[in-house]
Length: 200
Image 1 (tube, rainbow, N blue to C red):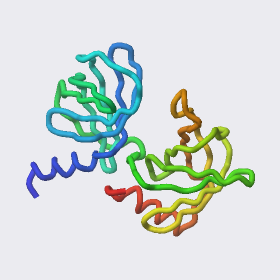
Image 2 (cartoon, rainbow, N blue to C red; image 1 turned 135 degrees about the vertical axis):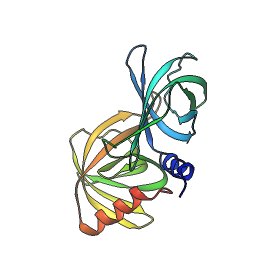
Image 3 (cartoon, helix red, strand yellow; image 1 turned 45 degrees about the vertical axis):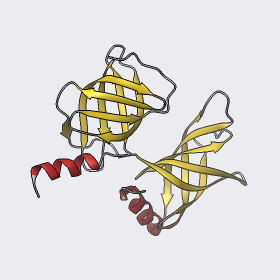
């Protein structure tokens, strides 16, 4: 395999992966999802309502499956839901330091807590848990039962609510971060397969 195809494969592994931005002017952090990644720029799926000044500089960190990538970049454009940043230096690859989070669509399930069943739409997955959107608020630290429909079979188990934030000021929907407490052997294998599947 040639060097060029190795680099292309490595870049491809970052698509739909969580990206963290730190604005250099004030060190404030923001997050989004990698839409495209090239030798010279990155396009980020950015649902946040923040608007940035064109020319703002950021330190960009992407945690992928096999490696991380870092670069300093300048905001070239911002449109509804997207940021385009041009690299100020060469994209550097490092050993990964945290679990990859991958954007997913069409994945749903239920949370069972105190006899109530709450439907959820899962937005991103990692080896240790996932992010989801639910109607209403859940208490941080609560232990819940899960039932998730995946392309590889049902995943059931126990998990902890790590955070719960209102999705928008005019919405009853909340974004929750959920970390697994216990999954069975088969469920763990199914979940690992899901997180490693680039088409998840």
